[in-house]
Amino acid sequence: MADESGFPRDLVFTRVCHVKQGYDDRRRHIVREFERRGVPVYFYTDWDQADITPEIRDELIAPAFTHPPAVSLALKHVGIWRDFLETDQPYCLVFEDDVFLARDFVAKFRQGLAELGSPKRKAVIYLGNGSNYYTPSWKLRKGQRLYPALHARCADSYLITRPVAEARCAWVDRNKIFTAIDHQIEQMDEELGVEMLWFERPIAEQGSENGAFHTSVSGKPHSLLYKSLKWKWKKYTRMIFGHNARS
Image (cartoon, rainbow, N blue to C red):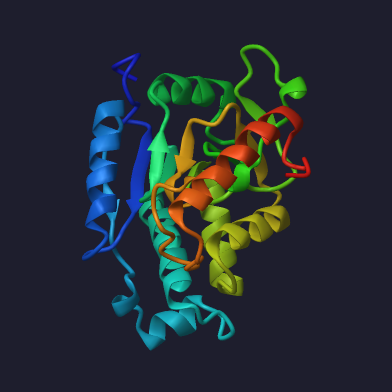
C-alpha cells in the first residue's frame, strides 16, 4: 500500500450496485458520501431488469425465483464477483447504492484488513449493521474489529477474498440463484464453509433500512419516519444486548 492512510485501491476491487437510469438521488448520495470519506466510486450497472434475457435466466436463475427487482440485484452481485476474478486484486468490496459510511470509514476499514491477515482466508466481512444485527456490547474486546458470526448480515456492504468469490461463482453455476441475494449468500456460504465475520462496531449503514430511502426491492409500505424511529430503537437496544433482544 503506497498510501498508508488512504483507501487501499491497489488491493481492493470496489463496486456499487446501481442502475443505468433512475434512482438519481441514490447516485448523488453515493458520489457525495464516498468522495467525502475517500472511497473510490465505481458503479456497477449491468443486469438491470431490462437486460435480463431468457438465456441468462435459464443459466443463473431458478424458475421459482421470479421477483424482477430481486433477480436483477442478485445478478449484479454475481456479476461483480465475476469481474473481480478477472483482476489480480486480493479483495472485493461490494456496496448497494443506499449505504452511508462512517466518518472514519477508511481508517477502520484498513484496521479490519490488517486483522483479517491473509487474503487467502475463505472469509467474508460484513461491514454494516444489516437487519440491526450486532455483537452484544459485553462480548466486544478493545482493539478487536472482526467477530465470528453464525450467520450473515445483509448484502449492502461486505468484503470477500478471492477464494470466496471463486467458491460462490462455482456454487451459482451448479445450483442457480433461487432467493434474494442476502439470503442466498448466507445459504451458500454455510454450505461452502465460508468464515462469516462481523465488523464491530459497523462502519456502514443501509439507507433503505434506517429511513433515508424507500426500498427499491421489497416495496414495504411504511413511511420513512416510521422506519427511522423503528430502526433507531432496534439499533441502540441491540448494540447493548445483541440481535436476539426482544425489540
